[in-house]
Image (cartoon, rainbow, N blue to C red):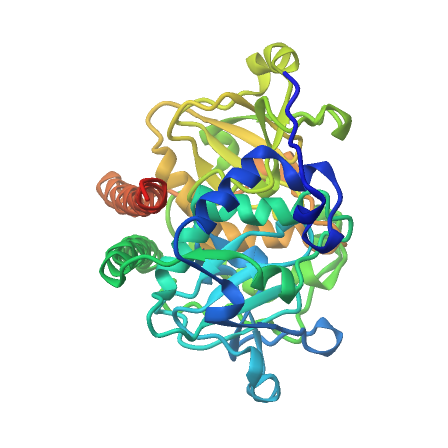
Length: 451
């Protein structure tokens, strides 16, 4: 079916855009719908500024949280993988400081158009040059309502309209400022904004359960106060170098020996004795499509979920050929082995998709709790083992043979169950947060559509 729009010369918006994509009926209907009710431009109600990156791209181990677009997750800032800038840098770039309630737009590159609302736990921070910070200054506009509006279909279509056909793949402040914001009753705005507070609460609960599980594991292993700072030197025998076929200094850091000796004080099994391992496949980027069956890559995996971000798809025909060997099943663990090795996720629902070559399917043998095993891999116990094995190269690769030798501490069954239950509760709270976000977006759309 051919889709077309008839545009008057006067509608060409200053002839800044002449491409057909910009004038698709879906976009025009949206703009018409918002313009037909009371609305304001984002530039009229908020300040728009961009950040900058420390000289040389060098970050600190601690200090002021420095936000990048890869930290955006389900409209929040994921604080588990932050880098930091110095207090001095933060003061020098005061203009781009962030605080709770600020809106952050990814304005450059592959994540363009994604956004986050700064949550209450991020008391302060700064941003890089690829992010635009919008601070709502109109006292009659609730910033959390604005953020949820942009997360909804109506907000996303406005962003998509500007990004589509934009050769430079960049949103400048004028473009961002041109987004329309529907102005609705303050009480209704506040009602929508309450969803964000509940989303924050559920994420907080999720983190609390996960922290309890971590503390229980570390206490049982005597690792509660484990110091894994790097030593400046260590003594290694030639026989040790020959046995592992490695001679890089990173591999022989004392922190690795310390944690392995702690694990060995308890009963421990090699991962290869607990699971069977099957590697994914690389069909080639030429097979990628904009829609179809999911192609799960390393960047799609987190310990909590399969991330719905920058997804790639395969044709149904190719999927049918590959699914027998490469489609994950409920209860299996997906483990990343390349680029960011050591991330383990337990499959919780049916997936119509294929895993990439950078991911392994771990099928648990009978009597083993998948959540417990995945949790151990994601904890400091597994993290330091993967770091040791995969380190020493520009692009990290964790070999299946090394993965089979990862030590998993076998705690009493009651303790394993308690840890797995806490992890499951953590996942449930995070799932509830996602459901609340979808509900909030739907409420926004209903509110605008009925006007």
